[in-house]
Amino acid sequence: TRTAVSPITRIRVDPSEFMLFHSRVKELETDHKNLFPDNPGVSVVYESVIRDPASILKKMIRFLGLEEQELLWPDLKRRSSGNLSMEIENYDELSIALNGTQLAGYLT
Image 1 (cartoon, helix red, strand yellow):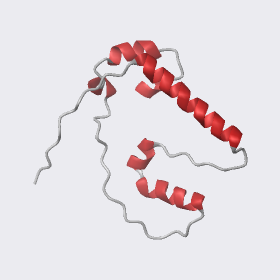
Image 2 (cartoon, rainbow, N blue to C red):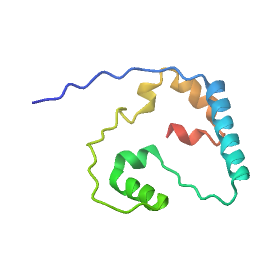
Image 3 (cartoon, rainbow, N blue to C red):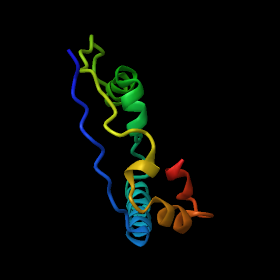
Image 4 (cartoon, rainbow, N blue to C red):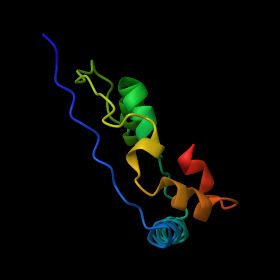
C-alpha cells in the first residue's frame, strides 16, 4: 500500500517579524542563563530529533538523571520537503533580508 503524501502548503514569512522573534528568543535565553547561572541546560535541535530520536531521548534521560531503559519510539518523518525555497512563498525576499546576518544560515 502507498501512503498518500499531502501537498506542500506554502507559507509567507515576514522578514522583520522573523528577525524580531529570533532576537526575542535570544534575549529570553540570555535572561534565563543570567537568572539561573548554576543550572545546567540541554539543547535539543529538531533536525537531530528527526535524524536520530533514540539518541536524543537518551541524552535527555541522562541529563534528567533518570534510569535508562529500552525506548520505544514511533517512526518520525520530516513533514517538509527540505527545500525551503519551495515552502516559503517569499523565499527570495526573506533571503535578501537575511543576507549578511547571523540568520542567513537558517535558509541553507
